[in-house]
Every structure is written in C-alpha cells, then in structure tokens.
Length: 73
Image 1 (tube, rainbow, N blue to C red):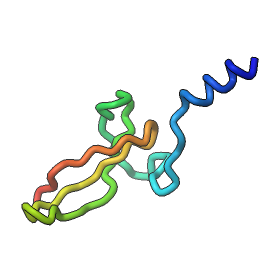
Image 2: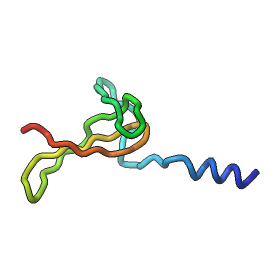
Image 3: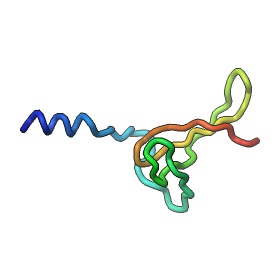
C-alpha cells in the first residue's frame, strides 16, 4: 500500500510558493496551453536585456506552468 501512496504523491505537482494558487478577484483568465483549464493570468513584466522588448510572464493558477509573451508597449 505504501508503494501506491508514494506513486500518487509523486505524480502531483507542488504549489510554487511565490505563484498564485487561485484566481484573483476580477481576473480574466485565458485557457492554459498545458492543462487546458481557464486559469492562465498575467503575472509579471520584464525587459529582455538583448532586444529591450517588454515580456509578460503568465501563470496558470491550476498547474503552475509559466508562459512568456511579448507585451505591447
């Protein structure tokens, strides 16, 4: 039985502490390309050092996957 329990725990993805785990009030989520749920929200901005383009990191509050997209300036 312990082997089955370990297999189940190993398959779960851990919550990353600095990423949101629930949709914030007023969020307008998009469909996550990884898990397919309507849970992808804009998260942080950064500027690429080489191209100087502004990029936004999106996070899925369900599967914790990150997607980086160019941000219109």
